[in-house]
Image (cartoon, rainbow, N blue to C red; front, side):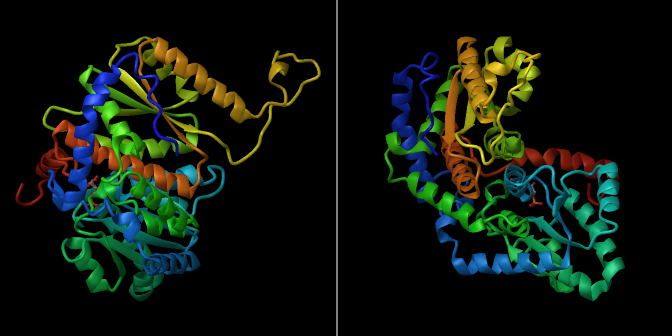
Length: 427
Ligand code: PA5
């Protein structure tokens, strides 16, 4: 990927403001390496890509191969960081018009969703990957109970144990105990890697390998970005430090909402992953940029109006995809009844890029600063690179803001209320 293009924020934030943040951004990045910042128990993700061995990847691939052999559909159970990374990559790389091998559960308590999911797999061979770091999260625990019962009912306990893989903490939590007792294959989420930074652990890698995604390339892209954003890399060469400083400078100028915009619908869940990463990492102590997302040009016909003319507290970060993986051109029409022959022969990607250029200009003119991040195309390698880039920038951003980017104390509040209302013992 190219370094973030900041020239469309300079009308809103003087270069001098960015210059004063250089040292702070470099220092924040250094804290991620030295472990002297807040939340330093959760820095395992920083060197994760380069520490992944080929042997580890082989273990993941052989577990994936076994599940592929046994099941037509694998139900991946998890919520938050325990599903969004895999979902983001799958949606970006999969074909939306072919039947999925992976379906997700446990990220919602919707009765209708669960009923429809179970109905959709009743004629299919199934297996499941259940993911929960704590092993105690209610949503995936409920889904797992339902899926486990169905698998045991269909195949018996012994075969069920071959069709269930658990990804959880090394030693703690209810899921670990259940998995050990039943003899499920298990993978460990390292203690020092929090949920939203866990896409390159088995949490993301196993479901992606089951789906046939090239996880070696995903890890290779992330490893390259690990080197490109290392604490030894100076601010001007470090894309993560540049992005973190830019968004912090905008925040200080009153731009409190960041909209991640992409012109590829396949990146919708990438944006959801990004929102979780930044929302949970930064939104605390009464501070933080609110992360939102849009898919253009689709949402230009809905959110576009607000972005162009609503309250001026928004900045946009565009993920610009230079090349598409397929070719479709606008056909020529003999009568040109719709007046579109001026586009005849042009690739849709060319039209899409013009839409992007025109929109960026319109929004900047309308008072919305713009950061542009260009990737060559949507591939496992470029997604791995982009994910690590956003993780690193998020760590730096959190430290610039003065918060602990690796905890999520606010997430507990609704749980206490829900448990009390449901009559859970002790609440
Ligand atoms: O980022 C996080 O830590 C959270 O979003 C968790 O991933 C989410 O709450 C699920 O937790 P667990 O994996 O413990 O079930």
